[in-house]
Amino acid sequence: MESNDVSKFLEIQKKAYVKKKISEYISKGFDEKTASNKASQSWRSYVGKMLEKIIFESLKEPLEKQGLKLVTDNDLIRNRNLTKELELVKRLISIDYGEYLFLPDADIIVYKVTKKKAIDELDENDIKILAIISVKNSFRERGFETAYWKKKLSESIITSHIKVFMATPDPDNEISYIAPNHKPKKMRVILEYELDGIYLLKNEFDETKKTKHFDEIANDILSIK
Image (cartoon, rainbow, N blue to C red; front, side, top):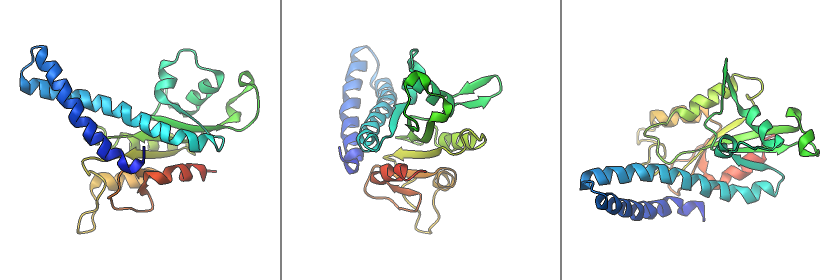
């Protein structure tokens, strides 16, 4: 799917999905208002996973052709039998909170294996994390979360080199436009300042050096040294 079409595709999917869910909830005995609210909540969970899959698949081929690898944080968290390679990836993006280690908001992780070795022989020096991509559909609840994780990653010499990108269709135009008085919204200012790049899956938005069309993200990742 062309990234230009993602916003329109999601809007069409939303109407059909919510309509179907409302009918399901009403059939279970919920009143129309409650059914509508529950359907909307269900959509927010569903669309996040679908959007992440769309972005992952669109990046997989061009990046893997150039020798890079991709994995999702869900794969790192849920898989209890990780290969040594993925265990190292997980360790190399973890953030230290004293007694605890947590993964950042890293929906998609891009990395490369720098030496040709058998998987069991790899160590931390053989893997380099290039970037993490935070996938957001809406900013209403966790708009600044990605900026927080970028700051935490920058505090450690082990993770400070990792680029943090955000990919979003921004359906509610929360960061897409700069106001007529040339003053961008607070969220856009902070995200541009803190992150290494924002990539929009839509045609119409105010572009800057840091806020670009999603089609540019693969080349920007490949340019990381």
